[in-house]
Image (cartoon, rainbow, N blue to C red; front, side, top):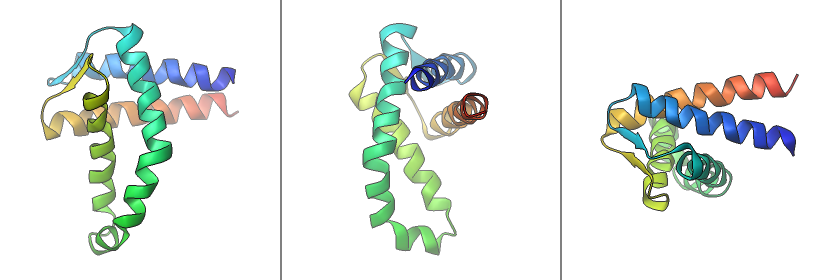
Length: 114
C-alpha cells in the first residue's frame, strides 16, 4: 500500500514537472489537482484503457501499434474533463506531458519494485 502511495506522489510530482516544462499544460496546485490527476490517471488506465484497446485492436494492428499511442493520449486528455485544476491545450502538449509522466512512472516502478 505504501508503494502505491509513493508512486501516486511521484506521478503527481511529474504532473507538476510537465506543467513547468511543457507549454500548454497547466496544473493549479499539488494538492488537490496534481494528486487527484495522478489518481484519476491510474483509475482510467486500469478501467477505461483496456476496454478501448480491445475494441480498437484491428486498427492498432493495421497501424503497427501507433494507434495505441493515440489511445494513451486520449486517456491522458480525459483527465482534463474530470479534474478542474488540470488543463491540457493541444495535441503536442499532451504528447510531451504524457512522455514526462510515463518516464516518471517507469522510474518509480524501477525503484519501488527492487
